[in-house]
Image 1: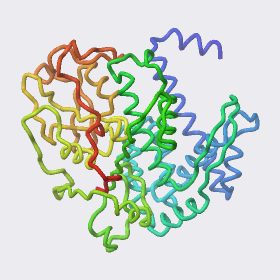
Image 2 (image 1 turned 135 degrees about the horizontal axis):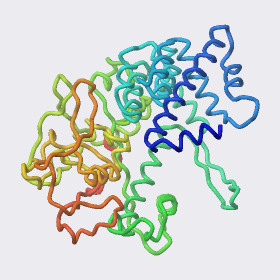
Image 3 (image 1 turned 180 degrees about the vertical axis):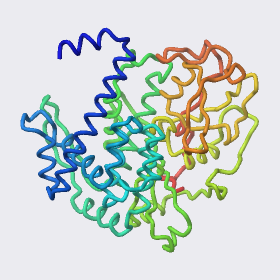
Image 4 (image 1 turned 90 degrees about the horizontal axis):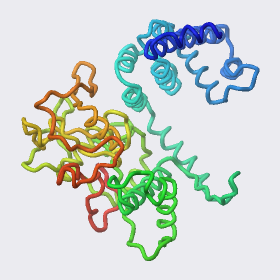
Length: 421
């Protein structure tokens, strides 16, 4: 092993890492074939998981289950191991297919269209494609039964953490916990802006991310705050995509959130009473029809359209509430990019800053139905003064430029709780 390490260190770092990744994929492919053979011979999931965990106790149960799923998918479709071995698919992409296969009785492992689509995109975008594939095959009754079972077991209890802190755990259905989490993050984001937001270096903020989340949760639960009186906290917006046929019951596929989670009809009916219904018009190809304006900042209507279309950061998959509307062709570039839906895309703050720092732009690849990154041309670059990647840029360096509000910084309408879209 020492001689191998010496040979690797003699290589340029990039070449050494590429060789290590190649070997890792070959080993993962071989492991999947060996464990798949156990499935072929009638072994149970538990037997394969036990074998994948090994006898040294250094492999977690979650990792053993992941390896067993990969082997089960390989048993259904040996071509997955071949793709791993020849480098046309990463281990992470293979695990996306394996996870989808576990939710579809193995169907995803044998669907070549899905496999090609996941292999051709980043793991983050592959997750979206696999989630959509699974949701198309989810039974509405199963979603409702799962929600009812989780909701029946809901509760709150107090306990103590290993570090000595007291803790309260709230547990229940995915839908209600997601709703509470969104509200905490919405209030936490307001606290982030009060602490200086992007204008202050992260290490200089008076509170950490976890501390702001705690203060936000405390504010929501008690109406109080450590530091004085508080405004009434606003509620987070829930974006739900539904067709008329789904709402009427003619289409039995589940209604989903914008991040692809299927919702039980009882939850949809519960939030519909307080919801704002906003119709979005799409073409037959699924493209949101053109909206444009003569100002730099996107309107709330355009932002709603972007959320319905992109469902979050198109690069890393971050939730929509953490995103900004990014101009593909910058507003202040020599070619003067318009604030039209066709020139806008959702990017989270981190991806947005990195894209500009690297002098890159994005485009939609029609063949793979995926957003991709490329180097920007001189006519596609705004004037100097964009924010630095470390987040320390002051607006004084470029007045009026990167002052785009986060998507949910716009004032909420009085009396509106969630928005059903």
